[in-house]
Image 1 (cartoon, one colour):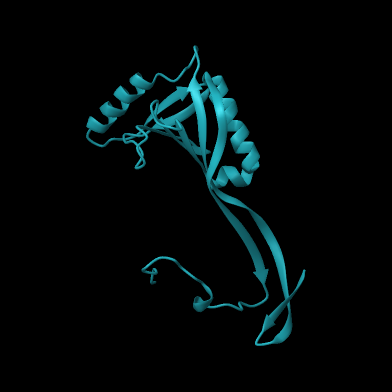
Image 2: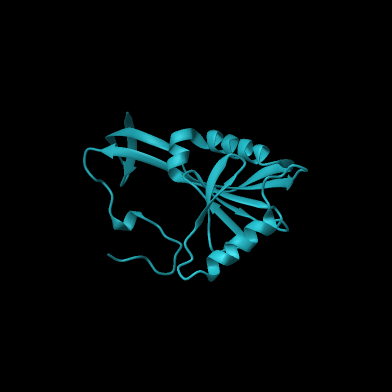
Length: 171
């Protein structure tokens, strides 16, 4: 691929090769309500979470819900969801009384392996199997895109990066 860049009023031809691109982080809110046959017993999971928290080390415990295995964490989320379940493809924050009830962060490896549509379909299939019913469309709250290129030589430096943070990391 050939790109034309402008530097100091001069047109410069630069060769680069696009390696890959995709979504590296995806966080979605799901509006799902428990149906009559819901497999997620909120009160029982809260009691198990509290037992984990009271344990000396607070290690997560494996739970099986709707045909999927998750690790039940000994803590709730920082944003107020009382239950946090995680597995190899997602971190699921759930609160029976939260609005929306589900806040899901899809993990980078799963996004690269299945694509964003694949992980959303996988979550919705799990939710259906677990006995949840959708009452509103899901909402994307965060999507980080990744673009990787190969350059023959590095043509950028520290000053080419802009940060909104008050303090930059130093190494």
